Length: 152
Image (cartoon, rainbow, N blue to C red):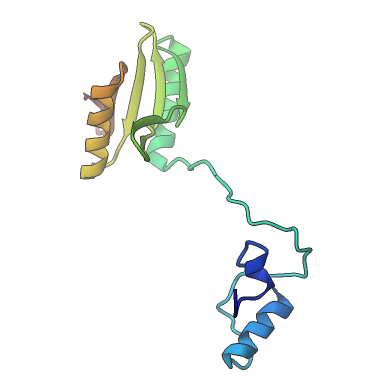
């Protein structure tokens, strides 16, 4: 691996201050490059890069629908719900994660997709999921008089 420093040999592309300065010197760049954000303090060679999986945060419409589901739960129309509680496999490396997994009072599992507007790929995914899985799929949109529901 000629031309690559210890950062690559450690299995990571993170640099210490000294490694970054040496790289800049080899490239003939003088001064400090303010655009480079991967500089780390001196660390032992055993540090590895790790992916961090963060749950997606709700947008305002999804949060408002969550409040609506909570009211339905208190009135007994909904037994349980969870935001992004289920991930459905549609094909290799293709998944669909409905906004809300809901168990209605009749015991049927429902997948609720909350949308302000539909993109073509989202509508295709929910239709494929509805054909593959034995759940009730609903598209939910905020209307003037409350929540508009469309059975998929």
